[in-house]
Length: 246
Image (spheres, rainbow, N blue to C red):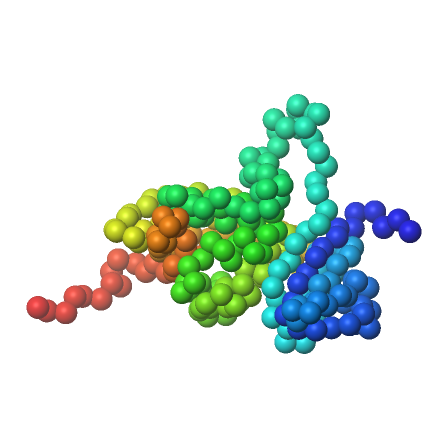
């Protein structure tokens, strides 16, 4: 049977064992578990709202989310020179990202942000998480509570929320200040995607990030505050409290 037009196939991996009887609970996706204790949900979903519904049910069951991967590939435009020329660079790089199945390590601090954008645009959750130091912390957006997530599982949950938007991310780096194995990066980013209600969503913030150089020379996020440089933090100069006397 042919799939309905415009559906997109996904592979969702969770930690925990489920059998085929859960298929109807997960919008008819194929459910298969393996001896390692992981379960894979695969199949077509009609839109982003349906994807968010499945992810919400994963969360409701308390199953740790391991990966969300889009299986469908975009139409090949290699025979259409006009399409290639007009296609945004970030989308072309996302396709290359999908084809090679992994990302190159960041050799400069600012490259971490660009690689994160590639991973978002490719909807590659594993690649997003791999860009964070094992001891990293990331601040959730204010609309998501503004709390701090730490460690691999916490960061994976935060990144899954972004990847679930089927995002297009663009990023600009304003300045980088390095000191030894650490670097302070000031960036500005914009994400467009689809919310849980199926409506378009846009996120735009100014970030403050600390990157840490790993023993192998690559850079990763160590502290990620995605809205830490927003103008909402600013106060009028006359309201700055006087410094304490020396």
